[in-house]
Length: 161
Ligand SMILES: CCCCCCCCCC(=O)SCCNC(=O)CCNC(=O)[C@H](O)C(C)(C)COP(=O)(O)OP(=O)(O)OC[C@H]1O[C@@H](n2cnc3c(N)ncnc32)[C@H](O)[C@@H]1OP(=O)(O)O
Image (cartoon, rainbow, N blue to C red):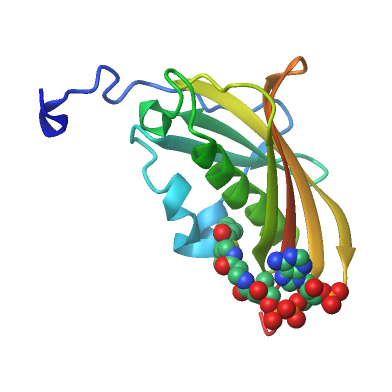
C-alpha cells in the first residue's frame, strides 16, 4: 500500500486533555497568535494535541497528546517532536509570565522513551531573569516516577515589544 493510501488506525481518536483541579485553561493564541501553529495548530489532528493551563501561581502547564504522526523509534515519540513541544511550551511560559521573547538556546535531555498515543503533562517554571535573559525550566512526565524529558530554555526578550 502506498503512503497516500494508508489509512490511520487512529483517525480522530478521542483524547482527554482535561487539567487538574486548580488549573485554569490558558488562551495561548490570544497572547501569541499564530506562533503556536507548528505544534498546536491541528487540535483534532494526529500529530500533537495540546491544551495549556495556568495554576494559582501562574505557572504554565500543558496536557499534550503525542499522536501517531510524532513517531520516531517504533511506538515512541521522535526526539524532534519532543524538542518542538519544549520549544513552544517553554517559550510560551516566558510570554505568559510577561516577557516577549524568542528562544535563544534550548537544551533537552531525553530521559525515557515516550510512548505515542499518550497524553503527558508538561510543567514549567521561570527560574531566573537577568537583563534580557529569561531562563525557563520544564519537564514532560506522566507521573512522579516517569519523566520523559527535561528542558532548559534560555529566552531573550525582544526589544520594543
Ligand atoms: C513570537 C511568539 C512566540 C510564541 C511562543 C514561543 C514559541 C516559539 C519559540 C521559538 O521557536 S522562537 C524561534 C527560534 N528562535 C530564534 O529564531 C531566535 C534567533 N536568534 C535571534 O533572533 C537573536 O540571536 C536573539 C534575538 C536571540 C538575540 O539577538 P540580539 O542581537 O537581540 O541580542 P544579543 O546578541 O545582543 O544578546 C543579548 C544577550 O542575550 C545573550 N544571548 C543571545 N543569544 C544567545 C544564545 N543563543 N545563547 C546564549 N546567550 C544568548 C547574549 O549573550 C547577550 O547577553 P548579555 O546581555 O549578558 O551580554
